[in-house]
Structures are given as C-alpha cells and as structure tokens.
Amino acid sequence: MKQAILIIFGIGFLLAGAYFGWALHRISSMDDPWPGPWPYPDKGLLKLNDWFDVRFPAPRGCIKLEGEILKVRITMLCLTAMVTAAGMGCLSVYYGGKNGSDRRGSFFQRHRDTDI
Image (cartoon, rainbow, N blue to C red; front, side):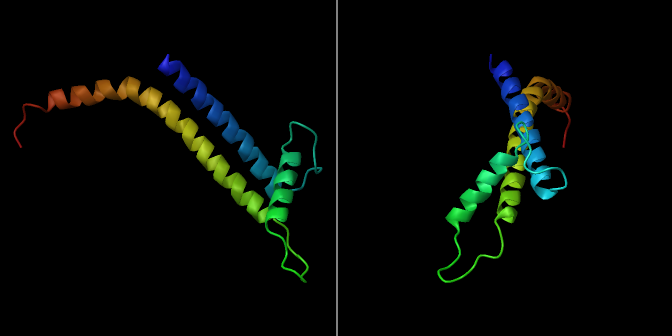
C-alpha cells in the first residue's frame, strides 16, 4: 500500500512540476497569444501578478513603473523546482528502497570478513 501511495504521489508531483514549468515558460516568453484559455496557466499567472501588485504597492506619491512579473517568474521557478524534487524524491524512495537494500546488504556481506 505504501508503495502505491509513493508512486501515485511521485507521478502527481512530477505532473504538477511539468505544469509549473509550462507556466514558467509562458510567463518568461510572451510570444504566444496572451492570455490563452484553459488549460493555459495564463489567468492564474495574471492573478498572481495582481496579488503581488496589491501586496507590494508603490509608495505614496509615486508611480509604479515596473510590474511584478519578475516575482511571478521566481515563484514559478521555485514551485517547479520544489514540486519536481518532491516527485523525484517519492519515486527514488520507492525504487531506492526496493533495490538499494539488496545491494547494500550484499556489499556489506561480501566485505564483512576482510581485514582493514
């Protein structure tokens, strides 16, 4: 049961990492028609940009000349890295525990009687 959960979570995290990577690509190069309909992540990216814009307003008496696209890019980069690492971690725990214990045990058993 634990193995099935690790596989399901690992694949889910990798799919989410792929979607966040696509969102990072969409926000980094706005060559395609913007914003695209669902399943494009553009509306979510615009909402995140607006959230950052409200959270970090211009000082009183000043005009804000730059947007918050850089913060959105950094957020998407961090989400992509963390979610992909979590997916790879789940799958490596599954595959490492399955094969690594046999190799590790046989290595120590082979070298147990050698003198150092």
